[in-house]
Length: 265
Image (cartoon, rainbow, N blue to C red; front, side):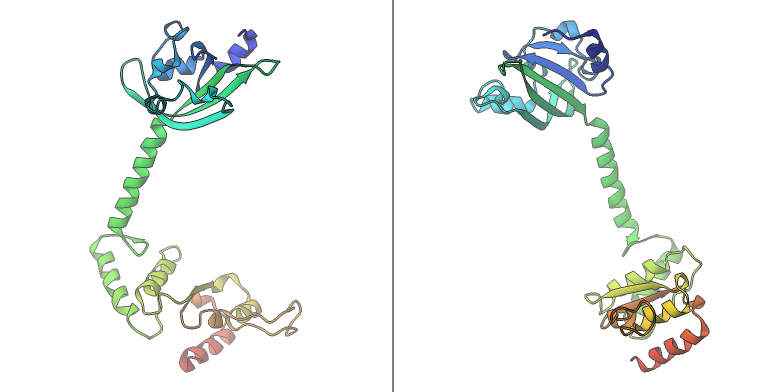
């Protein structure tokens, strides 16, 4: 198999290892990334069977009495992808994704296969790191709130007691301190945890829209009201409603809100 020099240069820019084998399974070409990943030089592997890499997946196939490569079974499998471990020259294992595709000549005859090898070492390391950090977050977290300081433990204790109450709850704090997390935690700890949790940022809406969002509106009650829409109070019926930035509510809406809180209707 002959390639134009331009193709060699292109192949050698790949980050994935590349190996081309003939129909007899012997290696006829590798790229520079293959040499880097495996530790084998091109001269050491040319003419050698691809089993020189001791791929664990291929080993299991051979152990079942199948041919040396299922790519070349009849009918041939046009493409295979697997996660495997191959053996480097120094004897260490390399976890990789191996993609293999059959090669055919102009007449459609099977002449070999091309395989790419993608190193998963860094990806596996990141997966382990993410799993470890997730476990740490679970250890340090309380219903999505992270903290183990005495102050946070006091907050968690207060939250536990407040969630058991039926009284409306006021959550104080600067913007960005996680009031929404506290509200959701209170919902998850309370008796209504299986009911809806609805939240609304009151600062994001003007007076007319805010009133409509809170209490709903009937079709035709204002321009653009094309259908009956329930409000957040009705949507949260039986559950919990969290009104964020409640201090920004206009006085006219506060009066109606107070009436709802007092009458619970």
